[in-house]
Structure formats: C-alpha cells, structure tokens
Length: 395
Image (cartoon, rainbow, N blue to C red; front, side, top):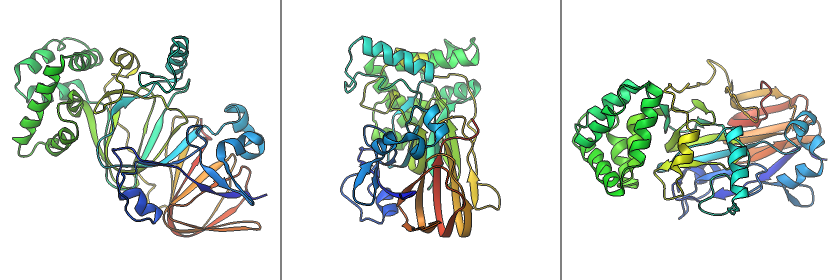
C-alpha cells in the first residue's frame, strides 16, 4: 500500500477571493471567478480526495476506515479518529469579515443551545456549526495585510480623537474612566449598536477624513476598505485593532476569541477543523452582536509576529493549538524527514522529489500529498518552497 498519496483538493470561489493568486500557484490560467481558498483536509463539507491505485476516495472516509494506521495511534485516540486540522491556501483581493471564533467551552455550549432551539445547521442565522474551537495560524506568501487584536486604549483614544467629530468624541468620553479592557468593550458595543443611519454617516465621515489626510499610516487602507464596504461601521475597527503587514515567510497565530480580519494578500492558513465564525462587520452575512460580545477577548495586546529561522531552510512556527503545527521548507538540496502521525505536504513553488523506500514522487507547485504515520527517513530533494501541516507534537 502507498504511504505517500497524492491529493485532489477543492477550490472555494468566495467573492473576496483573487482571480490570479491561486491559479498561478496551481499553474492554471486566470479564470473569470475569484478563487478564495484551496482546502486540504478531511472536513466533512469539502474533503480532499486521495488518488489510490485503482480509484479516488475522500480523505475523510479513507481515514475513518482505519484511523490507527492512517492517522496514527496517538492522534486516533486523541481526536476520535479524525484529522483535526484544515490546511488552506488563502487569497484575499478584498477584506474578509471582521470576526472571532469561540473557545472550546463556548463552542460546545453554543452548539448545544442552537440544537435545542432547532435552528438548522445550514440556516443563515445559525452561529455555531459544530462544537469545536477554531484557533488558526496564517503564514504570508505575499505581503499580507491583516487586523489582529485590540490596540492599547491610549492609541484607540488618540485615533478617535483625531476625527474631531462630536458624536464620536462623546462616545469616547463615555468610556474614559474605565479600565482599558472595559473601555474598549464599551466603545465597540456602542459603535456596533448605533442606528443604521448613524453607522452609515459615521463610516462616510471616516472615509472623507482619510481622503483629506496626507501622511496618516491608515489612509489608504481606510479608503480601500470603504470602497468595498461603503457605509459599514466595521471600518472603525481599523482604528481599534492592530494593523499588521506580514512579509513573505512571516506568520502569526490567532487563538480562539481573538478579534481579527484578513484584508489583502495570499498566505498559507492552518486551523482547527471547525466552521464556527462570529462576525461583526465588513460582511453581508449574519451578525450576532450579543453573542460576539460574549466571546471576544477585549484585552489589548500586540500580535506576536513569527519570522523564518535565521540562515535555515526550515522553520517551525509556534502554535498553542493541540490540533496543528505548520512547518516551512525553503530548500535547495536534500533533507531527511520522519512522520509520527498523518500529515499533509503542499508545494507552493518549484519541484520537490520525495523518496521513501520503493516510492518515488515528483511534485510540482500546487500539488500536495498525504504522508502516512510512522514513516522513517523520507528523503526530500529539490529547489522548492513547501509546507507540512501536522498535529502539534508540543501541546
């Protein structure tokens, strides 16, 4: 039986995607529809397929047939015989919704509550699609713009004060004497709960203010965001959240409850195998503000930016999630590697040759394979950039 198995992966054509980025990685011509994501996973809604000797089979069902030998003894026990992570190429040509994901306790409670309320899983107003948390990590392939966590209160206060808008100034003053965490929470809830005409008016005011600035660091991103979401009060989160531009090879881990948004760029994303998303703005999808306010971590903090290992062709990105860890290889030569549990390997640039006993595969960019558990001394060779997604051995 093959131990290194090629995969066929589903594409997602969300409207915020790019027409160029993922097709370029796959070696395909630019299409007419924006392609937002390429999924590599055993997620029940869109599992990858494995190319077996005489047929293809979904990764989900293939693992379920023999989880100990196909996922790994430890992983099969810890994760109930299921692959616990989802690996993606993500390509954003315009902002994704501002969002947060619940922790394990919140997800289980919310999922059970909505089941009890008989809200269908596919319903637009459904908030919890499963009982799992959704920490994630993004690693940039191109310059990647994002919002990640709340700025210090004094920065938020200064940003809003620059606007010299009576209503917004009153909003800030109402929370000045609170702790930073409570001040941020109060300001956010007050903003998001304004009357619709006020939200539209204030969002336009911020856009017009940015248009009149010469050197403000958020000028261009405010104007660009408003272009895609005119009148959306979510634009004010650009003043409240840390604005980050990851350079290729840089990454950041986002734990559950972290308020964030991806604005523009292409990257490799890995996450726990969940579909629980609570949105606050820059979206036309369901927004549940009372529930969102319960799960967001309003404590201000700077994001930790991880970089590639100095003078090394191998980087192991830090993850606090037990479900996943991401490895990056930027190789020109040879390297040995061993697996413990089942893993997914994706080539994004160049060609990679993989040798394992009697098996030999040549992967072009955009191709991926499933690596079975307990493989010893696999040989990688080539001039290429590739990633491996695996269950976190450190948590």
